[in-house]
Amino acid sequence: MHFEIDDRFRKHFKNLKQVFLYVIDECSLECPQCIYKPNNLFSIGDKEIPLETAIKLLCDFYELGARKLTFLGGEPTLYGKESNDAYSICDLVHEAKHIGYEYVRMATNGVFDTLLLDNCKLKEIDEISFSLDGYNIATNDAIRGAGNFEKTTRNIAHAIDLDYRVDITCCLYDDMLSKTEFGDYYVERFIQLAENMGIKRVNFHALVKDGTPVDTWTGDLQVSTEKWIEVYNQIIKNIEEKKYGVNVRIPQTFIKKKDFEANPKYFGFCPAKMGERVLVHPDGIIRICSGLLCTPYGVADYSDNKITWNDRKTNELLDHKVGESTPCTNRSKRDFGDYYPLCFSFKPKQTEFVYEALLNWETFNCLPK
Image 1 (cartoon, rainbow, N blue to C red):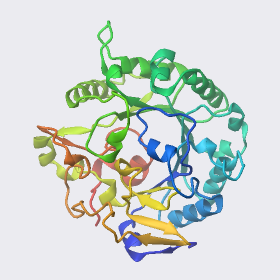
Image 2 (image 1 turned 45 degrees about the vertical axis):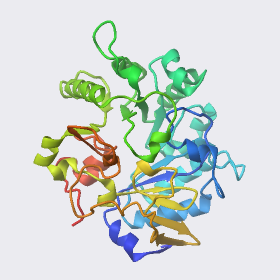
Image 3 (image 1 turned 180 degrees about the vertical axis):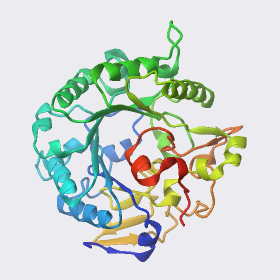
Image 4 (image 1 turned 60 degrees about the horizontal axis):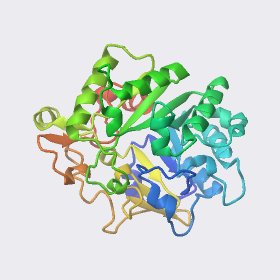
């Protein structure tokens, strides 16, 4: 071990499976729905995790059991900006695979220099997830900025030509959940775009104002509970009927209270209680719940070669009934009427490396044993 690790951290993360490493607090875009934007615009101290520190953390998390790794930001292709090394992210990919991580992926806005994809170390990666928020220039660039649809799709095409495994992440806002003149939903045009491009998977996020700190994203893009449920049910029906030529993952987000109470262990899925993931940031905070990004809340801190349990009132687990199956603790601060909110990551019966290969999604018990 490179870090001296608090025993409470070891105990809580005894089932650690995945690491989300936010390598840099900067981005080349300013998307209105970005939940990480406060850190993109303002941070004190390190804006990057130093390469040597990142490698040490990855070694220790691997020893604790992690096998899946995601590089994020900010924008991870900017990693190395402070050290003037444009290929630091490639070095991290190489080191992670050398350590033994079974599945390494990167989430990117896709507007990076295309030459990056030709780097031999980056080619060791298992997946690149590009962000698009529309099915054409008009719908995407209204959200992500002029010219970005063309840049991102060009890099997607080149990545596919180079045999990278490529998926797309999309934030679903109100307009995308509207019906077309033909009676289908605009989101299905996005799925068709992915099919036409040769994408392996589409991974959707719900832009729902849910009562967590990430509600501070700007722009009037949020969807209603009723609209989300309507579209989700249609998309899931189509998935089950195998109507799409691409793998689609979409969060359920809500469940009827009576349905939750009939199966709380299943619908009470909570990574914070499971201790199956860590979110690691340049400011030294280790979190579990992505709803608490850009806040003082976390479960631990790392510095001076130590990982220290958070004994302050900012420990994110203070509100959680760790030994019980409950609706999402953080999202439940808002009333959704007849519905309970579910975890951001609750996407059952939809292919995903960790839940299929490591957690056995359909039979897991989300509470620590």
